[in-house]
Image 1 (cartoon, rainbow, N blue to C red):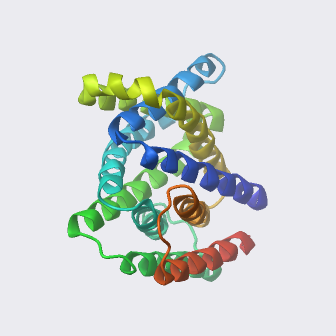
Image 2 (cartoon, one colour):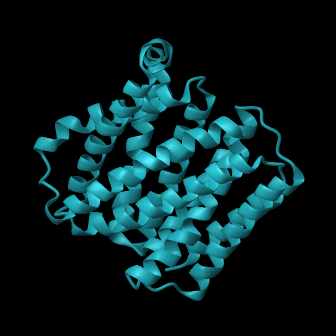
Length: 276
C-alpha cells in the first residue's frame, strides 16, 4: 500500500502544479479560481447518487470547507504579489513541516528519522528558494499563510477521509461542497467581472477543474492508505513540477539560489519515496 500511495501522491503533485500554473497565467485570478472550483463540482455532482453519505466525516468536511476558503483567498493574494516560482515553493514547502508537527502532536502518528530527513530537506529547499528572491513583506506573509492553510486542511482531510465509509464518498462530497460553495462565493464577489472573465477563461477553467479533481482526489485516496506526514511531504514534489512549468511556460527566471532549492527538494522527495 505504501508504494501505491506514493504513486498516487506523485501524480497528484504533477496535476496540482498544472492547476496552479493555469490559475497563475490567467488575468483575473479570483474569477479563474471560481471557474476551476465550479467546474470541479459540476463534474463530480452526478456521482453523489453512487456513493454513500460521509457519515462521521461530516464535521471534518465542514472544517475543511472553512480552511479551504481561507486557503484559496491567500493563494490568490500570493500569486498576485509574486512569481509562481517563488510563492508556490514557499507555500507548498512550509506545509509538510507544519503537517508533520500537527499529526504527531494531535493524532500521534509516527515519523521515522528517514521521513523527518526528507521533510527537512524539502523545508531547506524552500528556504533557499525564498531567500533567492527579494520579496515584499506582504508577499511573504500571503505565501506563509497559504502554507499554513495547506497544512490545516491536509490534517483535517487526512483524518476525515479515514472516517468516511469509503474514500470515494469523501472525495465526491469534498468537491461538491468545496467547488460548489467556494466557487459560488468567488463568482458573486467578482460580480460582472466574473461573467466577462468566464467568457474567455472557461476553457482553461474547465481543464483545470478536471486536473483539480485528479489532484486532490488522488491525494485523499492516498491519505486513507498511508502515513500522513510522509505523503503530505511527498505531494510537495508539485514544487518541482511547478517550477519547471513556471520557467518553461510562464517564462520566469530560475536563479542559482532557486536551483539549489529545487535540488534539495528533489533529494528530499526521493528520500520520502524510498521510505516504507
